[in-house]
Amino acid sequence: MVERPSWVKDKKLDPKFETIQCKRFDDYKDFKTDDGCYILIKILFDTYEISIAVCNYDHTILKEFRGRRTQDIYYAIFDYEKKHKLNWFKRKDHIAYLGKELKKAEIALAMGNSSYYQE
Image (cartoon, rainbow, N blue to C red; front, top):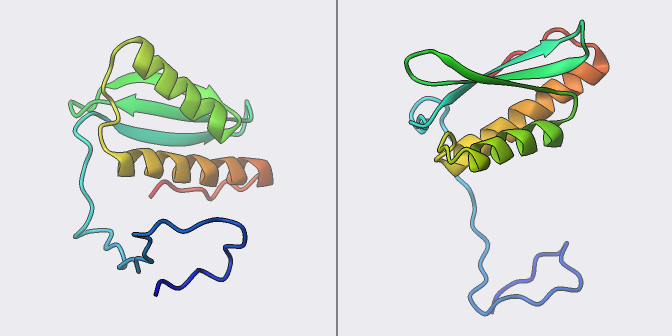
């Protein structure tokens, strides 16, 4: 018998439902680079914006995107990538990393905290 998670109230469970306990991610051993691009993130307090530089592995900045909110920036990046038939973000974990880092930067910008660092 499958145990229903206590926080689930009004949803059905798939017959193959299971809870998967996640192992701890090792930042060094488990890390894999995305061969499409890498990103640099900077908070620009003078314009109250977050800057994202999309770079190739020749260490050339391809494009810079600026905005104030996480979703504004990642939608602009992914829209640009799609419209121009680019393949910058090939790995889903890289996309998740972008979202995490953008949110950290957005919070630091809102709080006026200049100690933000990109992991």
